[in-house]
Every structure is written in structure tokens, then in C-alpha cells.
Image (cartoon, rainbow, N blue to C red; front, top):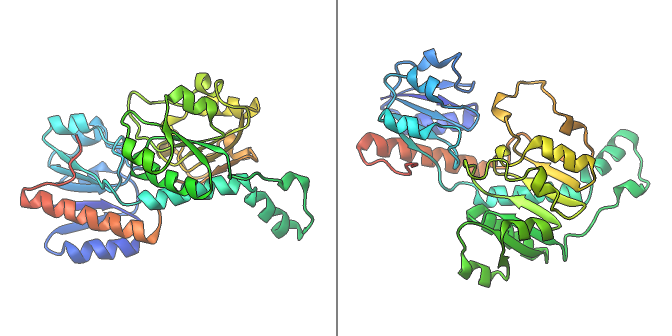
Length: 317
């Protein structure tokens, strides 16, 4: 089978090559776009990450395509409905970084709560050991954490929060009452969670129903000085509304690993968010640990081999 991988990692490239020796494999460092789709016109399978948007136009330009293996849990970057109509199977990696992303969530929160970036900058740029009043942070101990989405990542976030002695309120369309009892937190309505939380962290998939879940209306209901963390999907937050919340002093700080429209960003592009001192932004790297990357590669290989054998696994609906 002819398989195209859109991948930048040399280490992972070796793993994939060594375990798929019997197939014709080509690696591309760039993401898949309409501009380069002709390079893989004859390929039967492609493996992509979330930076490649597989829409109707891309699919129509891949007449031999039978299988898409996305190296992510989320699959909102793929038009799965249209792919299905064309007889194309799509698989994902359901679990690879539930601890990895949860840990990064707290890395963002601690960076904000203790103003680590500012303290580091003061010392490195000015050699200044004085305790500037602007570096005063706040304790997580006793604060209310609102967790939106209690899947595997959300659950790990709750476990970590409990180690910090935080109180937890959670919202999810599906409740795990056993887990809630074991970890001493309450499920509440979305409005109750965002209204009462000191920190809100997002761990929900992006769907048509929750697009711009955090918007101007919801921000106006939040506690003044609330902190918002997003390591899930950028489209969950309306950026204009977020800027409004920051400028009005409703939102005290923001930690983002994902941003709406990030797939269309080009090197050098800037957002007004980048200039805000109380905003920490990273380029979708919450998943990016040595262990998680290995798990992604191994599951992707298993998905490809299972599809070739006629017993596909981890298919998305």
C-alpha cells in the first residue's frame, strides 16, 4: 500500500519506517493542503495531524484514497461525513496523552498563578533580584476549579487539582458519578460551573454544539478575575469575546495551547492576544512529550496494519 505521512519528527519517522517495511512510504515535512495535494494523488492511505485540514476539496483530489489515520484524538479537522460517503475509513488515536495534557494544563496555570514568565524575564534581562510587587501571585490551594469535560484528560486534571487542595466543579453531558464520589467533586450545569469558578479549564472535544462555548455572554457571567485555560480545541473560545473579557478586567489571565484558526496561521502572524502580559500561549504542544509521541506512533501503526488486514480499529464515526 502507498502511504503518505505528513510528519516532521525524524525519530518517529524511523519508528514508522521500521514497522511498515513492506509498504511504500513517503514522508512530507509540511502539512497537507490543496496546494500540495497533487503530491499524494495516487496514495491509498494518508496519516496526518491536526494541522492538516481534510475537507471535501482535499478528498476530491485524492481519487485512490481509502484510509485516513489521524495522529490525534480529535478529528474535527477531517470531514468524516464526506469521507464516509466516499468509502474512506478514518481512524484516530483515542488515548495517548491523558496524563501528558493534564500535566501541561497545570504548567500553564502555575505559570500564570505565580507569574513565572515575568519573574524569569526580570532576572534574565535585568539581573534584578528585587521582589517587584507586580510579581505577586496567588495560591491554588482552596480555589474553585471548573472543569469542562471529564473524559480521560479532564479526570486527570481533577486528580491533580485535588493534590493542590482545590475544590472542583465539573460540567459534562455524561456524568461519571462513581468517579465524582471517589474524588469528592460535584457535577453542575455549565452556567453554575462558569459562574462559581476561580479557574476554568476546557477539556471537551469541538463539536457543532459547543463551538464558541466560551463567548461574550458566558464571559459576562464569570467571576471577575477568572482564569481560563484551554488545552483542548481553539474553536471552543471566541477570541474576540476573550479579548473583551481581558480588556474589561473580567478575565484575570489566560493560558492557551490552542487558538481558533491556528491551522491557517503562517510563521510571523501575530494576534493582539500575544501582547497581553496576563496571557500565556503555546503552539499546540500540550501533547508533545517523548512518551506521548511514542504512543501516537505505535497506535497509528496498529491502526494502519489493522485497516490493511481488513479489521480496522479505532474508527471514528
